[in-house]
Length: 169
Image 1 (cartoon, rainbow, N blue to C red):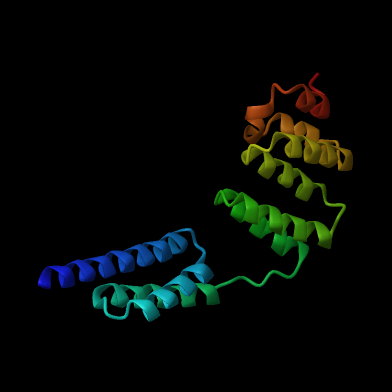
Image 2 (tube, rainbow, N blue to C red):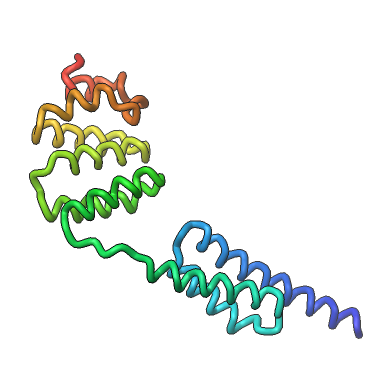
């Protein structure tokens, strides 16, 4: 009978470890809201696993603090600059969301559209990239010249559409 009890303890620990690992994946991705939610659920469900619960409490505290550190974005420049930061962090989807918000603030800003084209290229979404780059060049011919020298466009520089858009053809 003790063998069955040990197996059930081991199974419970494995489940706790799996739940904790899932929360840590969200934490490492910087998704503090999701990590906080998973850590709270973990805490409620696996209170008996003291070692993991203690660690979870520490990470829960960090999540709460990091969520407080959010930057209030209000203006075109706020959205644009934070999008550049997110692009540099390789968080392309978030960068695109921020660029869309910046675009709503000032739809005639070519630099936003150009940066969106860069993000699409980095995400390997060639058609969206070319369409957006064409739009940027229509707003300001300078972006065609800039694109010719942009290393982020290297993967598509031999594309005929890219050459037409940037006037390399």
